[in-house]
Length: 113
Image 1 (cartoon, rainbow, N blue to C red):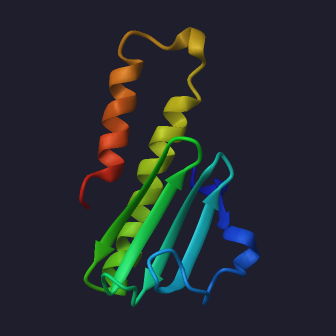
Image 2 (image 1 turned 120 degrees about the vertical axis):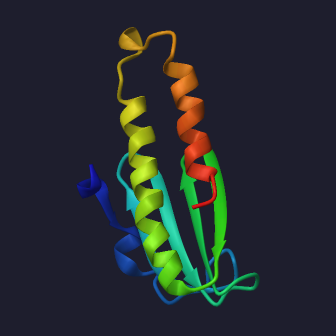
């Protein structure tokens, strides 16, 4: 599903200051409604990733280096894709375990990488 990711606002945010006070290095949006932003040299840590799933959640993780953040960015995107795929299950086809799986996927996204 990774082909649904695109550079946020055609890259106009790259180089600007992000929500953690750092310079935005990478900023991507999933067309199903999610965003991941990697910042360097923020006010709290050498790197941070802020992610949001529109209308559902917002989360920030901090890293010791930009390289570590870059590696984790792809992991966050993969985790978000799994949650998006879960939402694509038609309501009529959602069984008793759908809600539990949903909660597990959210927990996976916010668990430390």
